[in-house]
Length: 53
Image (cartoon, rainbow, N blue to C red; front, side, top):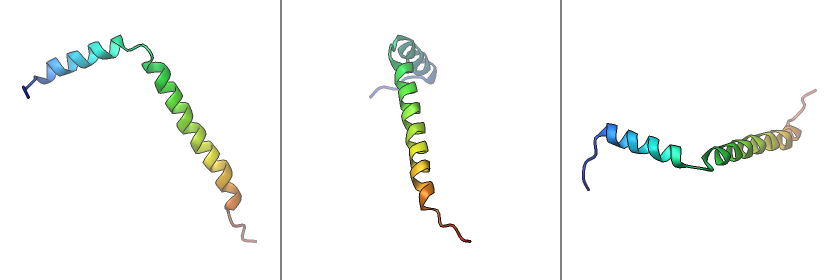
């Protein structure tokens, strides 16, 4: 395994990020899934609260 300088690694990572096509779409889908799961969990679990009167 050869050593790569950090600047070369960052340059390669930036070039690879520009070549990705569906990266933004996948990011949006994942964010929507996480938010939807959190809202669904909140909605379902709020019915289990104990109401102390």
